Image 1: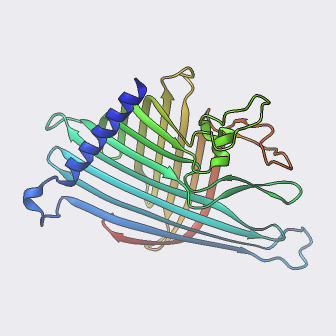
Image 2 (image 1 turned 135 degrees about the vertical axis):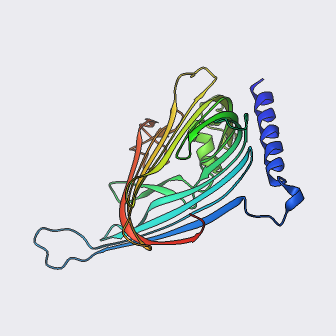
Image 3 (image 1 turned 60 degrees about the vertical axis):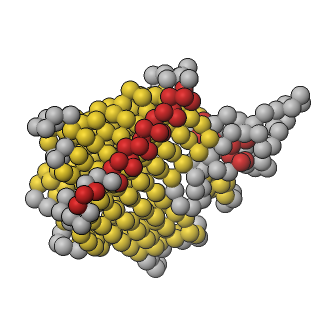
Length: 322
């Protein structure tokens, strides 16, 4: 039953997406209803120490990000597309090169206002998240254990929802029927059951039968998304987004949380200071702090709160509409 409903959600989302692509087809040349823009940020940090009594290590860090959007609004129809790409590396002392940021996010939403002067929309949302490159856990002995990579994991969320937009800077979207797909593109991860997929089968002796772990998982559940973005002071913008999802299965009530906050302070047209935080919790994602030295298998994997914080000052280049 869940697979049937999930397939129906996919077909409905695709239908709405195709409809959005053909909106206002009688006036193809008219682009006045579109707003498009790109923000590129580059942040560089260097620390050099020589004969420094307090100790410390030399370090170099570089972060790059691209945020692009294309939105359409005419009469009772809206079509919003957002892409966020980010990658960062740090080279610190004898530790060597590591990444400190890595994200791929794409979101597309088609909405239709139920009443001409109302604040309520029926919306169709497609949201994809993954990363560019492998992630590793560094052990005390200096060894590395690979724990993630491109599409390992990857997340795809598809929903048809009601959205309340009482003001330009605030929206609340709720869907009682949302499909969430989790992809694990590395078979060894799938065999272990990483990121909530079904693990590999075992033989009569309890040994894992390699290659039998599922590389994807489909869930049907309830989804809530709240967004707020507004200038709270002159040249200071606050942007927050929280996403909550719970699946209709035996673990109903366990809520996946994705809460992002960003405070951006504009110094001038090209120099910006920013403070960004992200808090994640997913009951299906087991995070380990210890690994087997031979097999790299996690020894103490369990759900944990994930937290990321970025504070930086860098160059910002804007193109298109604001």
